[in-house]
Image 1: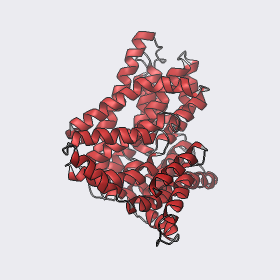
Image 2: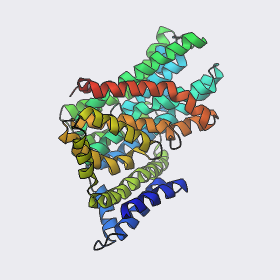
Image 3: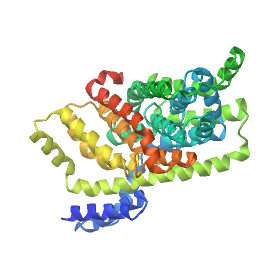
Image 4: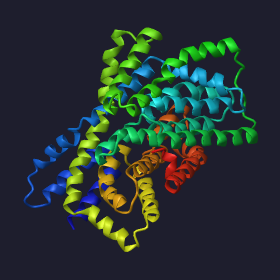
Length: 419
């Protein structure tokens, strides 16, 4: 009875527009208060212990890296190089949009940073060159979801911390699916380019191309340094996040000379604000998870699937539906903190590998970034392009189909994870 009332309270708070982190915290407090014998002081204790993790230090550090990259105008360098690389294809700016998202994903680990940094430049450029607002917004929003799939990825760090799964293996596991999604979106753009006669970008001379490559190269090798160091055992994912932030500052300050010391306080404050949003939601979800644990929800889930014959493919299909629904109104981090502990034990019992489970959850939740009403990347891109939510959503539907096809491939062929 108490559990049902808490669910109703949680849904009501979301409908009223209460920020998701506060809605989770209020539901946790009400839930614990409804159970006799458990002191309310357990809430702040669980919130503290939910954040008391060495792995989670990587979250603000990757956000700092993304902010340094955007403030240092490194995204501009990657965009210029991407246009030079694929701009001569029909629909060249759209192809470049996806290409730069794949590159930016390997640097920042943040989809929203990708949408904001790339969208401010490419959405106006695309509309100016004759692309429809729907095409400009749709490609930008959809391709930014790759930021949480191609390593390094903040959501992979969270999943690894929740399940004690190797973050390095998760990084490797997300690499090929992320590339497949990117190239699949480019194939979709090629179809639209032939159908609608999309324009090509201006031709770039060999000398200009080499100059753009020289400019972009320091940023492009960042993911190789991060992933290579983790795989080679040189440093942990958290140390890699710290290194990426230092590296982003060094190339911005001394190679590109686009950041001054006086810019750092504003960058740090912005990083703290964004980090607090994610980490407070995670802390509140940890407290609510304690309440759900009282009712042994994970045991009930395991019994339910055991009654269905223990089919792991049916289980993964249900998990995808669950996280698709949750992702429409909740950020990936609190969604994972609340529900991964519920489904993860059953996944292990049914023989689903931890890395495969993680990549399935992360890809599924990335779709939530471009589906209303939450759809943060969709909202950011739509705001930049001046497009209402209904037209923005219709523009990303073809690219959502690409993500779902890759997701089904990951379920059917775990060899794609390379681990």
